[in-house]
Image (cartoon, rainbow, N blue to C red; front, side, top):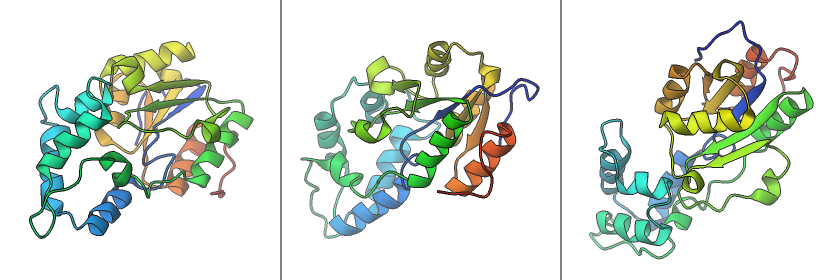
Length: 223
């Protein structure tokens, strides 16, 4: 999946964090619900109401991502929506940390970032933060630019956050590629003239970037 001006060289690749540079966030959430015995439909209902394409502006997730709602406040708000299989409440303390405890860095994707940089391509991080503690010790030196939603009070797919990362890279949209696992985020990037890759796995993303950035990504290598 991609668009933009294919005649322009790709000078930068912009990466999402959770679910792209990490293992699957969806798998982590399912494991969390299984461990704590949470009724999946109570979580799904909150996510649909707060994060779907039709969600109104200013939902708790939107405000968490833009830093208007603290992680502790979000934990309490979400916990009120959840129920366990036996109908009991869910503890709010540390809820976000528990939700993503099994989401860890994906070595194959970090190697892909390193390969791009070694091939002369600039790299950026563009992440909607859910109160994340980013592993900056691991990410240090991998990105020319890092834009975190809560720091800049903007969130994907707001076009302003894409323009911000492009401004910081000092590049036009046509010379940048976004890699993201969220279809609305990919579509928003394409509307601005960026090329985009909808991430479904390390091998697929590596193969697509090898096409978009010839010579910068060794093909047939996942780690």
